[in-house]
Image 1 (cartoon, rainbow, N blue to C red):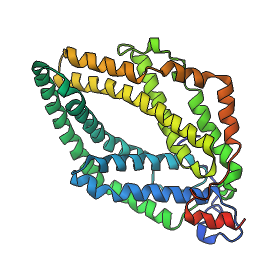
Image 2 (image 1 turned 30 degrees about the horizontal axis):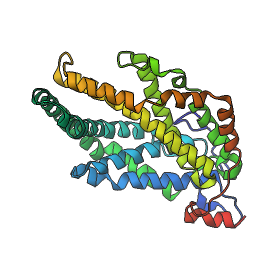
Image 3 (image 1 turned 90 degrees about the horizontal axis):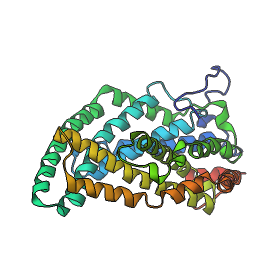
Image 4 (image 1 turned 45 degrees about the horizontal axis):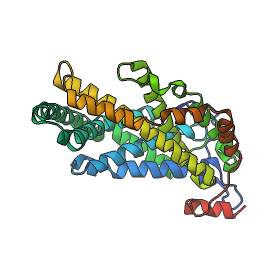
Length: 341
């Protein structure tokens, strides 16, 4: 699925039809209806966190805003064939916003990791050197926060907000949006599963994962991003599949967390090298980082072999062909349309 690109259609007939024009008493639960619900939810979650993020009293607000921004971007990618967003509701701007939020969030994570996880374990001499590195990272955080503050208060962000609000009030749709949701779910999700299964990261064995082998580390980092993307996308569709689908999403989350912990150690080392401004000479910290990398990837070979197994890959594709409806998980606004059919 090509992210951020909308199909070009003629501006006539019902090709820009809004939900207010649909006869909901007879319509199926459609792809467009779900798209509107998900984009609305993620936009609102993102927007309501702005003031708390700028107050900067609790890092959790920034984390939640970043996640909602990423999920909004993911929803735009999933449904780009079904929706017609205003030009100012641009996926590039949403991506840039997530990157700006992420710059601050990543520094928060690494500083907290040094202070809470690593620092108490070391002797005084190495503690002092790490404290100097923490001080340098905190200075970087001040600059990153200022950039984020500027971005959240500028006209571009305000225009983005207004554009999404207008679309939510009067959503414009592509023709494909009016197809029954359950009929198109396998088509929506199959490319996503293929993206996960065809990633070259599964071919990298544990013996090839070493800090100095940057190509392998970068490939695994990309696999982590693919898994995160897959998790965000599939979670939108949990109400329409049963336990096997839910269990697979949880497994993808675990793989994402596993690769994420490995990537965090790589990022930490890189940040420290820049902060210290010279050769990385923190032997105790180096040992702890290597120990953590070994721990988080201890069962990596078992996991990757599972995802290379022909039978398991076939199972995942077959799972997508059997959508169901869990009424307890479906949003109340959608239940009326399900009951009408």
